[in-house]
Each structure stands twice: as structure tokens, then as C-alpha cells.
Amino acid sequence: MPRTWIAIAGLLFLAGCSGGGGDQGTQAPAPPTAAPTEFVAATSEGLWRGQPNGKGGVVFAYPNLQREDVLLGDGYVSYSRNEDIWTVNTDGTGNRALVNTPLGQSLHAVKGPWVFYAKSQSANDDAAWKSVRVDTGQQAVLSTNGFDFLQRFVGTRAVFSDDIAITSVNFDGTDRRIHVVGSPAQFLFTRAAIEQPATVLYEWHHDLPQLFSVSLSEGAQEVPLDTDVTSSTYYAGHSGGRVVYRRCLSVGIGATEQCNVLSVLLNGTQTAVLAAQPENEAVQGLIGERVVIRRNVNGNDQLVSVPITGGAESFITLLGDTDFVEVVAGDALVLRRSTGTWRLDLNGTLTKLGSTPGGHAYQVVGTAVCYNVSAALYCAPLDGSGPEVKIVGNGRFVGIL
Image (cartoon, rainbow, N blue to C red; front, side, top):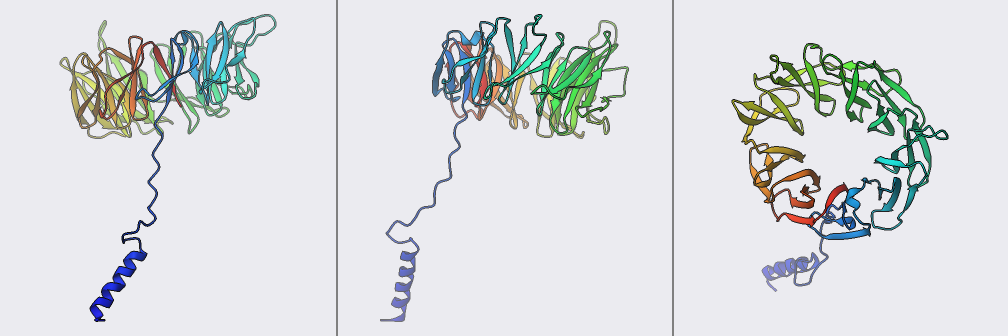
């Protein structure tokens, strides 16, 4: 046999061994497909569970559930029922009373396996706020102050405010701490909670609103985030260890406030001016490390973005009087317009998501956005790749699974 044919035969043999011949070799497994994001909604028929494309249905029948307080926890839903609190699994099973007493109680929040509720006071039970675990039934008294209101969660601590004080306590009722104490002439409003480091941001309203941060560690002192006591300062957002806020100054009796946008570290240092034009400026949201700002110039609204640490701003687009930023969705914004729902990225590119006008209560659900139009609940893909879908005719969003 000539050497050329021997070489060719050897190559064919190797090809056959490698699966490159006529026989099918072992195929590499296809990468797993991410499961579509599911969410739950409270409807006139009960608890609806499904995907933003409309696939799903009622898993727990209960009339006019959209009229009740309904909150999503870890694998369960809590809802109000005749001044009692009930719970049902997110698959519709296990419906049962969680808190059922003659005094009556109102559902306010859930976090992990814990449910938080306000309780009527009586001679035998002076607890104003209590918590209960869905999985074990463990209960705890969180506050006996009838003026307290549950404001935030930080880690495993619940933060309360009664206008003149800010306190926190573990979910199981232990280790209660007092963080800020004011006076009856001063009003405290918590604005945000930061997990790392455990911190609460709040506004202290006396002569002028002032923005502060306070660590939840024992004995920590509150920190003023702006030293200009002649202006009002309002929380506008945060990212990492920086807080974005508005500094506003009234320009005359009866005149509207002129507001600029700044950022500062939690310890009150390294202040950066993000926007300081003569026109009023308002924060619309944070996308990554950029702050989106709406500015009115001679009756025309501009939308710009600025690095959170300061720097050159980038123009995004002009907005009409009926254009409103509703929610941040990943690397873009969702706009409510007279023509429906739109996506707007930082480059100014607009993508129409839905044609039904009058949306409200926008929520990002995976790669979709969901919203109410009157009583109906709609969802639409954020990339505009599919149609707007009517989920239910009478319902509202509860939470993402």
C-alpha cells in the first residue's frame, strides 16, 4: 500500500475514534436554562401565582384578597382576615390562623420567617408590637410604646420610631437599644436602612429638615451628613457607603425651593456636589454608580446622569410634562408616559413596553416589569421582545418568589 493511503487511513481511524465520523459521539450537555421568575398577586379570586408572561393561576381561593393586607415571606404569604392574621403556603396549601385573639391585630410587615404586627392594648396585655415565627410559632414583644411605628429592618433588628426617638430590637424581642432621642418640638423620620455597616438614615425636622446617619451599634452617636444648617437636606438614595441627598434653599417668600444634589460618605466626610444649577434638581434613581437627575430648565425637563462621587454629567433625554420615571430596572429606567410604559437606558434609547396608559405601582420582576392600570395587573418584558400581558383583571402585586 502506498504511504499516502496509509496516512489517510490513519487519519480516518483517528477521526472515528474522536467521534468525528459517521457515528454520533457523546454530546456536551446543554447549559441549564434559568427558571422563569415567578411572583404572587392578591386578586379578587384569591392568591395568584405565576410568571410575568401570564402563565399561572389562582393557587388559593379566597374572595377579595386584594382588599386585605397581604405580604410575602419565605415560602409563605401572610394576610389579614377579620382583624386576625392568617398564613398560607405559596403553593396554596397549609392555610391556617397564625394570630387569632379577641383583641384584634393588624399585619404590618414580614421578614424571613417572622411576621410583625400591631396589637390592641388591654389591661392584660400592654404589648403594642409583637412578632411571631411562622415555622415555630415563637412569639415576642417588641415594643410597649403605643406611639412607636415599625420603620425598617437591618439584619435581624427591627427599627422603630415615635417621632422623637429611634430604637431597635432583635426580632425575638431581645437587646433593645435607643439610638436617637429628641424633643416634642423635633420630629424624626427614618428614610433608609443600610445593612453594611448596620446604619439608619433619618431626617430630623425642627427649624429646617436635616439629614443624619446613626449606627445601630451600642452607644453610637448620630452623624450630620451636611454642615449647611441654613438649608434643608433630604435623603434621595444610597449606594455602597455613599448617601445621595438634596440640599434645598428657599429663594423667597412663597417661592419654591431651589434644590441641588450632593453625595457624602456615611461618616459625613468627602462631600461631592453632583448637580448645582440654578434650576430645581431632583434625583430619579441610581443605576450602578451613576445618579440620574431630573432638572427643569426654562420649563423643559432634562434627564442627566452623574457619577455618584462627582464628575462630568451625561445628557440622557428631554422629558415631557407627562413623562415620569417610575422605577430603576437593571441598567435602565422605566417611564410612565401618556402613550404607555417605556424603557429608557442611559444612552437615551427608548423602547416601548406596553401601550396601556395610566400605569402605577411599578415592580421589576426578573426580566419584566409589572404594574397596575386601574384595578388590572399587567406585565411586559423589559427588552420589548414580547407583548404587554394582562395578568388579572382585579389584583395587585404582592412579591417575587
